[in-house]
Image (tube, rainbow, N blue to C red):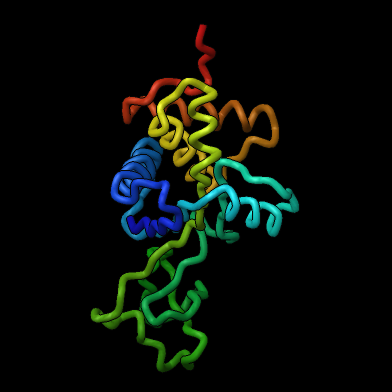
Length: 203
């Protein structure tokens, strides 16, 4: 798994947050028993102001939020696969080289004729990957929420990372039934990394 993490704001402890995000992300895939060797996720750790701009641009909401998730849109199990040649993978039945994306079909690269397409067979090319999408986190909002809810920053952040990764995998909470399923998964995954139920009301 390749989790590309960009830290844009000095409030974040870059080394610590990268480790937290990587561990929480792996916990999701481990709990769901999903293959993750070739998965790519991009993460931006930024400020309220940057999140506000993203929120306004993509959701029409002119205010910051704790996390934004942007799943890649695709009909495949995860997302769009990219073969080693850098061109899009168009799955189809043929006699040509198997695409490294593990979809089990053949690669027809856009810049090659079918009888010359052998780019994916080159061992020197990078392995194919499945890009799930990207997430962005706002430091100030997360810090404020953790304090208001009586949680540690790390526990709240672990919850938000898991919540975001589930979104990238296609989970949602628009309907009550979907929300219950997603929350139940979050609680169970958090338990595997030693974080208590974030939805439990403290007396």
